[in-house]
Length: 77
Image (cartoon, rainbow, N blue to C red):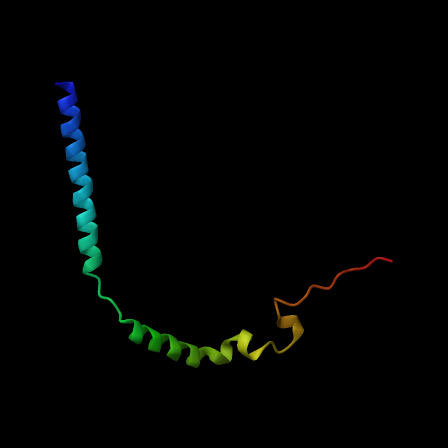
């Protein structure tokens, strides 16, 4: 008798979990998707528009401005 109540409770909990999963999947399915071909074109345009600001492409005007430069070490003789 008590066991039967536990099984019913577990079934109800399982149903609630499954319902929330279905709701989440419906929300995700309704999201507008951008085709990959369109996203790639947007990325290419962004890169072309900002390439003059990309220090990995154009380099740094001086070593002082380069945060990736080797740090000088202090040698004590």
